[in-house]
Length: 369
Image 1: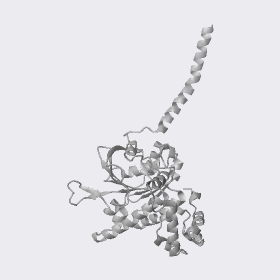
Image 2 (image 1 turned 180 degrees about the horizontal axis):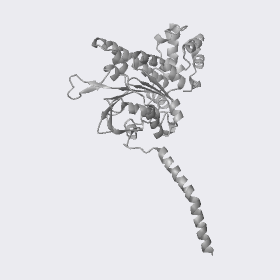
Image 3 (image 1 turned 45 degrees about the horizontal axis):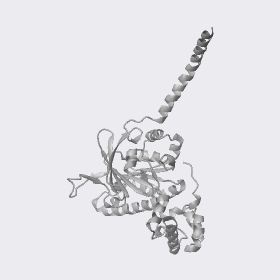
């Protein structure tokens, strides 16, 4: 993947020069932040004051000043009226297609940036298929419903099938070179690898200006790390810290974060009405901005339900799993195949055309005689 230049609007040196006198930020902090790997000022909104203090040559006072400056610059005033908040939201938040018009209608436009979207379902319900389709559609041009952005895909429990990924790209008419260079994959089955990937996410997001991060699946490293019941509280605390970090990342860089989650048996008082429930407990339930529940139907048919969202009703829709990602119909005709058929037809016409022309000329000569 070719490294992209940092957006000039968010250059860390320009940001500090503009806010240095107003917030009392020393000029030496430019070098300190760059040495630490921060070139995009939006990364400041992801770090906490404690994280700032761990950076060499950044004092506690400077950390507080950087937090205030980044908050005012990228998040707006602490108290905003609805008009200001809505205007900022319209300018920043973007949506992109899921690959299914039915799902886009259900979600009122598709997946959104600046949000944590959780996709829950049992085995073979279509979670990975939905994520792989989103990884392709996010690379589409904005005018076609995409984000025109590279994608980071962290897989923890499933094999990433590159050929299937390229097949989905053919369906949406994306060049294979772009598909191969715009997707960055991380295989992190163990908690050690997974935590390393999470720690480096802000660096990669700012370097490639990524608008979509996918984690498939979130709970797998935690369940392999925290095994006993006594470690449940520790796992919940770790999950809360991770999800708070992902939330700051989504808001700071205005990127969409989609993560999948599996289901477990429900042993609570309502187990008769709901025999399964999402893993992760309350830490995930209260952190995700949108929870989508997938269920198996017959054959390749699946159902998606908005299980939890602050602005959408709990409605459902149906879609299909195909060889080319999720879709509204079970069979898909690729645009490339149609083009190939047209080319073949044109070739046949080109071959037949001289013969027909000769026959017509002979007929005209006979008429003249």
